Image 1 (cartoon, rainbow, N blue to C red):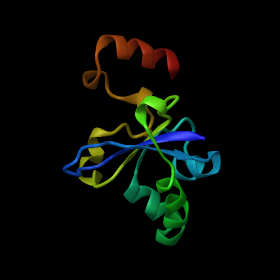
Image 2 (image 1 turned 90 degrees about the vertical axis):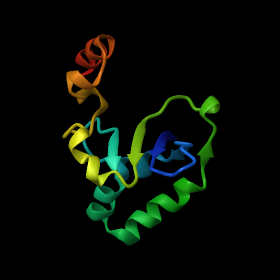
Image 3 (image 1 turned 180 degrees about the vertical axis):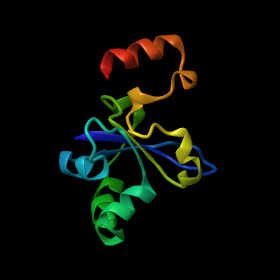
Length: 112
């Protein structure tokens, strides 16, 4: 199982984690080493019905942050208007240098 953090614009700002099977994760994050996705892109890619089929079981597997063994992906809801701020590759290691601190730049460079 892989953990997906949901980032949305909800007032509660919980940014909850949910477990996904390897197949579900691969459907949501299909690119090589991809770990960022917009729900709008996922839905457009697989179709609304398939997106629901994949996401419904994921929603049934919440996990507490303290129990999670890592965050493997971030799924953004209602962020299409902020697309320009995400790396085009949809990989965390590809954030522009100006978005992260020096230690993150070194880490990301070592993982590209």
